[in-house]
Image (cartoon, rainbow, N blue to C red; front, top):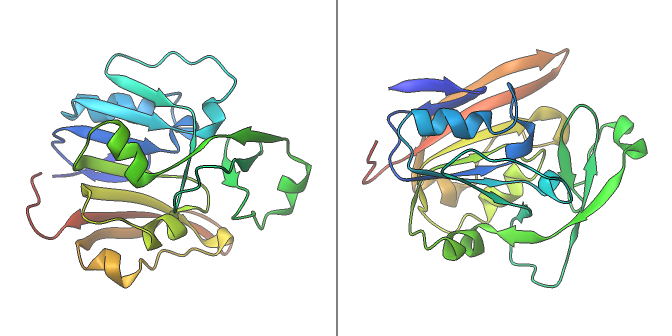
Length: 204
């Protein structure tokens, strides 16, 4: 069953662990996406965002906070610069935003983690869902996707950041698209809600 969770399409019910990349900017309030995933059957949510650095957060039960930015490849000795702008949002320093208002935004340093390291840290072979809303890093992360590591992948693509949502061929070897639609459009700029599910052994 296809459901909408905070502007992201997801197949329900969920079983197992959800990785929420870009958890700080949830529409509807902090950890709202995680709460809805738990209500849809998820057992555990890993909420990852560099904007959690240096600020107190109160995650609900069964939600673990990781104060870091997810990057496309291992960078053990490098810290990314995250540019934030109101109301909420972040950009990896390696993928600078095209929007001019970000030039005046504050910068903060955050630790980095790649997807393989994150899954190893939590002893995960496969997640139930990986949701990505990381303001421009989605495309590079998909290009370095390490394998069929989640039953489904829910991604927000951003036209204004130059990633309109064409996944790399190796990613599509494992996943098939279920949803790809513009859910918010401002002039010629669109945000795309895209859902991909595992072709083989899809358990939802």
